[in-house]
Image 1 (cartoon, helix red, strand yellow):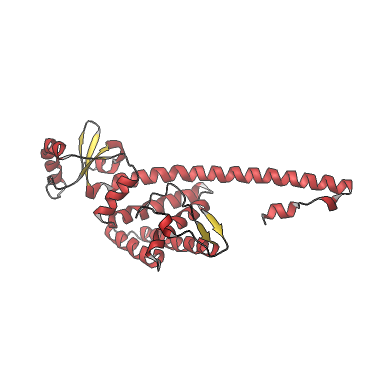
Image 2 (cartoon, rainbow, N blue to C red):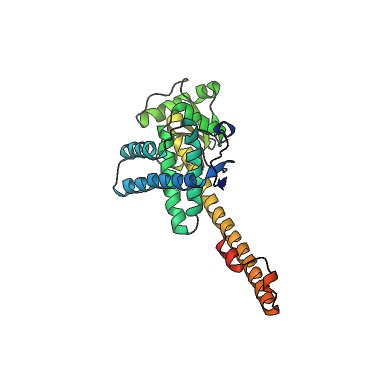
Length: 267
């Protein structure tokens, strides 16, 4: 992702992304400076709104509606093809901002995870299946033959949690049980040979766990990379200043092309 001052952009058709990305790679496109800033501000409004909703003790249903409203108000775009770009760009900009301290990382991780959870739940079944398929998540759709072998157990679980009886038309996924701790702890899934059988309407727990785990790791990594470049830049600045002072003492400062002030300011 490159920030530029011009108004030229790579056409959206050249950059296809999932409807609901997991933000595993930065987009390869040019971004106008004003968009770079505005997109981050709009997304921050969404995250702040989520934080306010959670602090007020809103119910899950109320939070789902709040997230939907906040997203439509702040993250829409006149061009439908640009909505995904706005989403991804704004996430990566705020990731850079909020990676700096543990407190900032913790807040950003919590708000982005909550945002992702409700966006996933608000998405259609097609969108949810696309997220699972396109991001190569560790879960596998249960075949009809396998469903027939475990359907009685699935029926028992469905009755216990008050859901409709599982049928062959429903899609279930086999997920390593440790990936869905919320469902396992509340006994809302059937477990066999280390795998939890998760219905499509429950799979959000698994997807959200994957999202949170990945984002937590990359926030720390981003902080380390940013710190590394700060160190490198500082070393280069000190070297530049040393050369400057040597040339000053030698009386040949006019022949020096650089400037420590220029380098430190990054201009």
